Length: 197
Image (cartoon, rainbow, N blue to C red; front, side, top):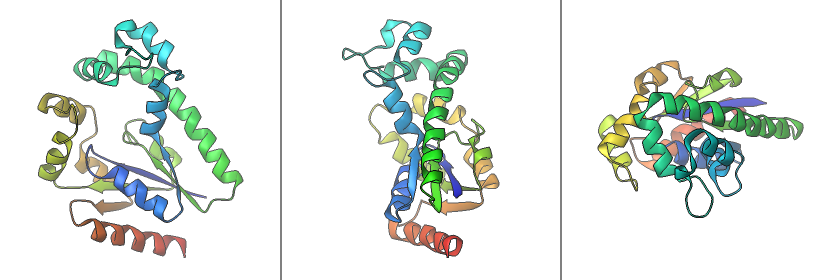
């Protein structure tokens, strides 16, 4: 089974690219969705996060208020480290279960969609790494169009990640996501056709 790591910077088209893999019937493990589930109502990380950060990070429905927690951890590197120590092992458990299930089903390829692939050293589990890449102006414009995103928050996120040019340098395949969607899809599908035939 070929394990492909999918990463890039914020707003460089990772989610869109993950959907393109799904179009080819390739299973994708979405680390962000795993985190979302862990922080949701009844999620496996809720009590641990409340123990570490207090109940003021809870929303009314008993889930973690991601905006409140996010503002806190992106302004404070020590808090970010504490949060990562809670979340990374839980996400790793989800990921291992996903990989084991698809190995058992004799999948030809799976994708690990992990924003912090290199930062969390998850690339070590992958045979190949795809990095989504777009010019900074396009990346910034896309990011700032998201709900709740501010210049300060974007700067905090960018500072918490390995610079995109360094990720590009470590990629097995760089996907240009700053162009027309059909062009990007064709680039990806051509690469997959070379790999899988």
